[in-house]
Length: 349
Image 1 (tube, rainbow, N blue to C red):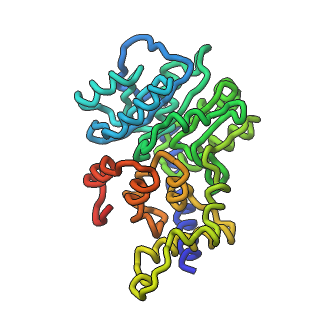
Image 2: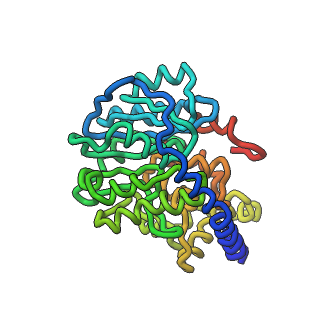
């Protein structure tokens, strides 16, 4: 019952945001220039190979989190040329020096247009796609990780099977590939739908519009344009992991009364039951939040920062994240814990 009330309130708030903020945002977005670049390195022409990553970043202080360097190094080591696109307006000297060792190009722009404004600016500035371009990946800094080497994940981007790949997919609002990692293959980047979509992206200062029209809208636009889309970690596969006969390991039986009432074990059970309840009622879940455990146990190399910082969907068992990272992935959670020290307010990791 409480989830139904919570969902109704969220729907009302979304509608209010749309009708109150979007009309003004659209006017501003049309008046603003899509070109918001303040600095580019190197000056002049930039040589890029056939596989390019446009890596979007924001930090109001002009810093770059250490894990992001690991992320971009992994991309580079797997044959991608990394273009760092920052909405920070400035980058501090020390991270700038490190970025120059990893990236083919660094684009610093004003904090206007969110991720899609940054990606469009980079596409325009670099003249992408070029004749030799075979792949363009749009990625951002909204994740912690990688917690595992990225080679296996990147090798699963099979453009013979689908034109566009995401790591995860969602049915919330409408079906879409989640936009923190979108990989466009050779057919997609030369399609009219791709050119038309990016040509229409405007720096609209309304997050609700960006989410609906761009984050969700890009998948819908590509599908309408005749392109095929797929996710490496599919929604159905993740949901099927939360079967009744497979839930026992989440909350092991205890003979003692204390064990049966252990709040930590109860949160695992509550989250599993919550997932099953929503599946039964055909209410779509957010894979990178509600299904975080299932993702990690199947080798997903990231955790969304929003989940550990804000937990906006009130995931019951998120307190297990450190244990799962250590035990299921064999990875070190220390870099994430260090970041959380500067991010969390009023809660513990």
